[in-house]
Length: 221
Image 1 (spheres, helix red, strand yellow):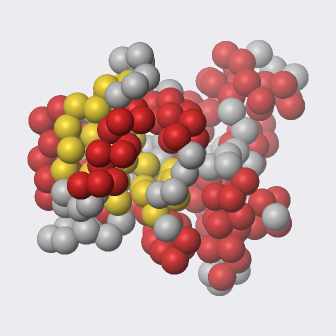
Image 2 (image 1 turned 90 degrees about the vertical axis):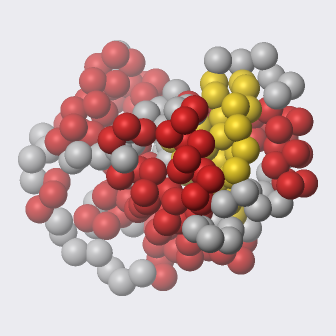
């Protein structure tokens, strides 16, 4: 069972998301919060698999709440999905850098919401939908040109190759097919990369690939 915490200061938004998610046999909404402080308290209490986190909230916003949650070793297995709107583009990149596993626009279709929860719960980054891929491209494109980073020096050539494919949004199975590997081998490579780079999840690997200059926004166009 995938356990979900809903965090949004609008009751109607939370009610709508709950009605969609609670209808799925493998998903359970375990708690709701109206601000970042409530999110941190309930995350510690319930240890959900996935937190759907709004950005703009009173008291403590979603970005800072995500940063604090990601820094808490007790909540290392909790994955945060940021809920945003198109006029909050600049928050998204910062949210990924802060430890979010991905993001959704608030007017997403019900099946996309359900799919997103399942994707993040199994440890993948939520970066695949075309609209959000373009959004990340625009954000990254507005930032200064990256400089080569020594953080990648400890990776083997194969690990660099795998990291580049992770940054393209490929799953382990897709990486395995692209490189003619077994899925288990692809998973092992990704796990080793995360360990070497001290990355919380795949989304942070994508950020590192951007910031190191390994990946440029062109692949998301």
